[in-house]
Every structure is written in structure tokens, then in C-alpha cells.
Image 1 (cartoon, helix red, strand yellow):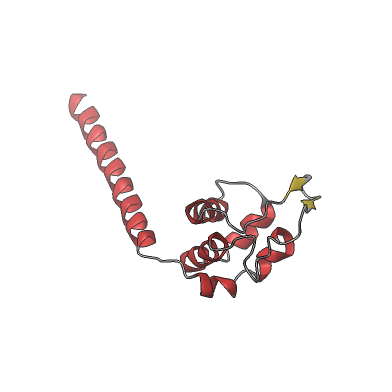
Image 2: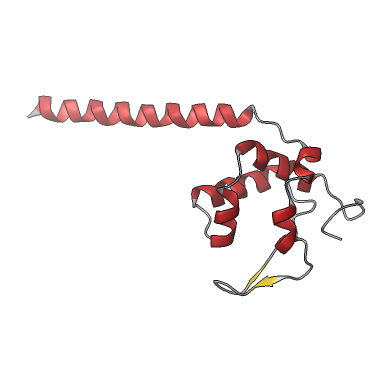
Length: 126
């Protein structure tokens, strides 16, 4: 019986280590991607429809105040988009948009919005 239990403990430990290795590889790959605000400017058309309207609230699936994105922290925006893409954050519209984005698109969009200030010329947050 000890051999049986020992074998399964080793298999479980190897599975955990493989999971850490895969996560580390994905993190290293994501770390290699640098956002480009200029490229992001051409990728935000689908964002502006909701996030560019002051005091906009959605009506489906529930009433929700849509936040303005200009001036938000780049890492926060990247994390939020990745979470919507993976399904860790739940809002059907954002999930549908996020799954269509590559990691580079996400980095570029986050760079664009994080570079905005209230006085930026084309800031949809005005």
C-alpha cells in the first residue's frame, strides 16, 4: 500500500511542478511584450463605444456604471483585460471583446489609456 500511495504522491508533485513551469513560461512570455501607446490608439475603437461616454451605464445583463479608462494604471488595465479574457472577471460584453485581443493588443491598449491625462488631445476621458 505504501508503494501505491508513494507513487501517487510523486505523480501529484510532478503535476504541480509542471503547472508552475507552465505558469512561469507564460509569465516570461507576457513580460517580453511591451505596450505601445501609439499602436494602442488604433485599437481602442471598440472601447470608446462604452468607455468614452461620460456617466454611461449599461442595461444588460445588469445596470452597471462603465468606468472611464483614460489615466488608469497600465498594469491594472492589462490584468483586467487578461482576467476578462480568461473568464476570471465576469461581464459578457467585456469577455467577448477581450477574447478577440492578443497579448500585444492588450499591452498596447493599456499603454494608450495609461498615457492619457485630462488634457490629452484625443483623450476619450474628456
